[in-house]
Image (cartoon, rainbow, N blue to C red; front, top):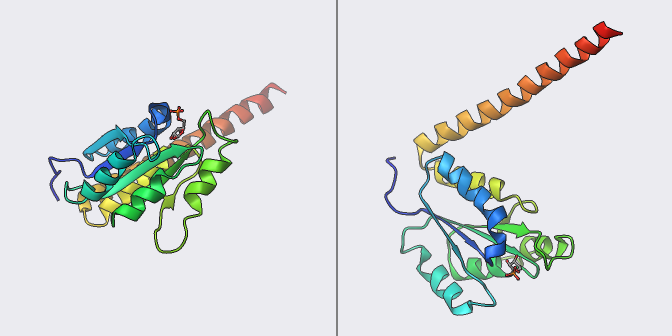
Length: 175
Ligand code: RP5
């Protein structure tokens, strides 16, 4: 499949303060050459903007939504309730958060009927990867990019193993 010329992933967040975490999803999409948009949509400060965003996302060509929020994080669930698109929720450990548990549980514990795919606390990188995996089910080119990402990730761990082994052998020789 050739690269679409419009955003297919939408990264939204409750506040500008979520950007340092949420930009990690954008980095993954940049690496995989997936077109995306990134903006702020607050469920409680801009509720009507949230409704409009969610209701129009599919017709604008968006395929997956990544939504991050901290504290009483209702953004991912509310957006999921307003669209049939898959929503990946990123619990953000924000300044108003109780250790991240409030955000994590708000996003994780969606009642049956409206799913939100929840990643780990602050794990926007995994949200980006999951979005790519969803898109890759219908895109062989993206599948190949994911396979080479995994291969290089594995290789970098094996390189560390080798390095540690060499350092350990060096210590043994010194004794
Ligand atoms: C949530 O409250 C946002 O998603 C953010 O994580 C948190 C704090 O927002 P600010 O007060 O920094 O704007 O709605």
